[in-house]
Image (cartoon, rainbow, N blue to C red):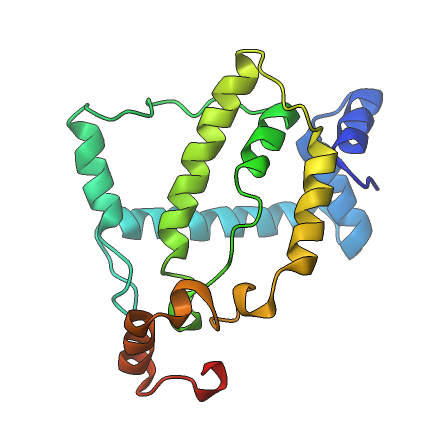
Length: 196
């Protein structure tokens, strides 16, 4: 077991194995499942994710209609060759992780209608762009002045002190706007009174 990124990296180096192997071994230990079971579950999860990507690229919309179609827009944009962020997502190291996480500290979770669609899907894209830029910075030799493990600890403390309304309850933030409440009413027939 490891408690932080430094211990994870140290274990991988000491045992001369990849971080992925450390994670598989830990999963075996924690869940008391065989390597075969874990790899099979990973393959199933990957298949689900790949199918979701294909549905997204085909323009399939969510059941609520709040998300869908953006993947086709993004693909068309990329095909035009005028994008700003580059084609390749570079490998990131713990330094890039620290840089990326620092830029996301304090981000609220305010899903409209309690569904992980709006604003979550677009925030994921911003998170991915943030990660790419952080990776480029780390590969250029730029280091976070605050080590990764301290950033993670700070992130935990921020999460502990945030109001409940901003922690995936759909009680605050964008979820509490009049437009979000109208979406919620149209999806479920009425706004959730517990959130009012």
